[in-house]
Length: 110
Image (cartoon, rainbow, N blue to C red; front, side, top):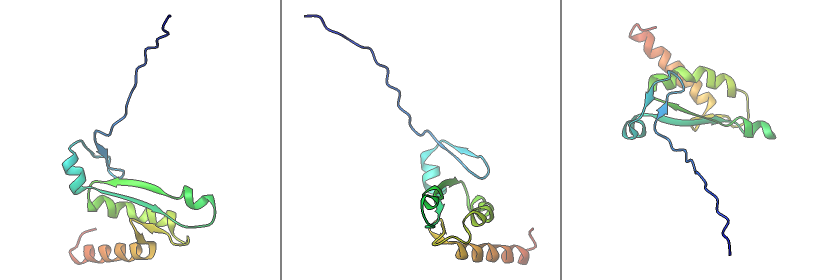
């Protein structure tokens, strides 16, 4: 009886770090990105495949980067049924941006 053999090489992919979707900063220390970073999604429940395709996921390294991303995220989701960014309704995110803007003007920052 003869054996038929095959040599296989298996490649696995694993996450070795994260990259901020706003500023591009990279972090390879899992403790830092698990404790300090925010992983969030955005999307809406509009009709049909559009709602499935609307779901996107992001990593940001700081509150500053999250706030910097909000205007574009709001623009992409505003007007859709049940639209959310980081599990917050879009209108709440608009109010958050207004609040941050008013706080900046009180301390004289642009």
